[in-house]
Image 1 (cartoon, rainbow, N blue to C red):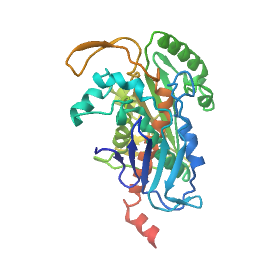
Image 2: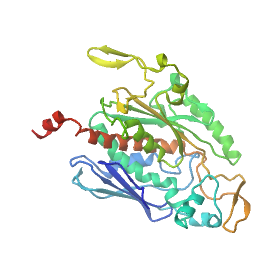
Image 3: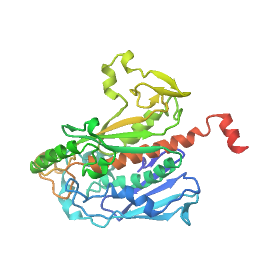
Image 4: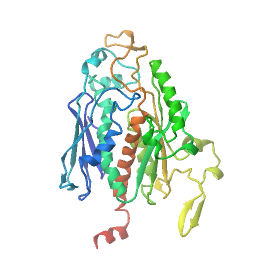
Length: 365
């Protein structure tokens, strides 16, 4: 299977299936000398692991990461960093019926047509459990970014019809909310909405918003390797994402140029903007302001409510999906969005180091 490698200079190669022995990632291109340990990566994985609240799958996994290579005495060596998370709580029998039919909203049909057969146990490579590898690699990227003062923070902006009120938001609320919402009032409303959704044997979607602060000006390329284009690619590669916005996003289509343009001004020799409709990116390059992006996640396709599909015998059938599934994946996807953003930024920051002769000569003289 091609398409399991992401990045050009700072790259990850992911492997593993939902019900295989484990999920893993090889990180290539990490500089030597970064302080790194399993204890530094684990908090990122803990944010996405299942079974933490009633709004996630009851599948119990510790998702404990092991570093197999690429470090010595607590620091990276400049060689490939290999990591693994073993699957401990597979219940493949829950998926035995799925072998005979194709679930609506899943990749069962398309995967089967592409390869001629499929791993039906939890979706195999199409499972959301694949994102473990992204988060492990993204944790390293995040640690690299922090060394130069760049912070990547995501949170749940909306679930179903419930959206946060920015006037009521606080960064510390994100970790207090079981849904990772910075507005605790909205979080309580969203919980009520989800409780009703779960009682109706259904699922819900939502929006994750991500803010990047501390980005230098000029990161990205102006044609096919635009910063916003690569961020969109990274976010859209997450299985359940169906839309990406940067800055004003789709709202920009209904604005006038006089309103959409961000006015510049100087303050103490620093270039600032009076607004940020660009989302921190102009002409494919970072403009020094906060990067703001949003990812729209579809509802979890595995629901207990009766659905219609067809089976391998060519018969139209009704199904009720069994197993342990998330009524909503948005809260667990928050750290996945952060990870894909961090991986993209590090890769493009590394590429930017060779775009000017003065920077080249400054480094090697």
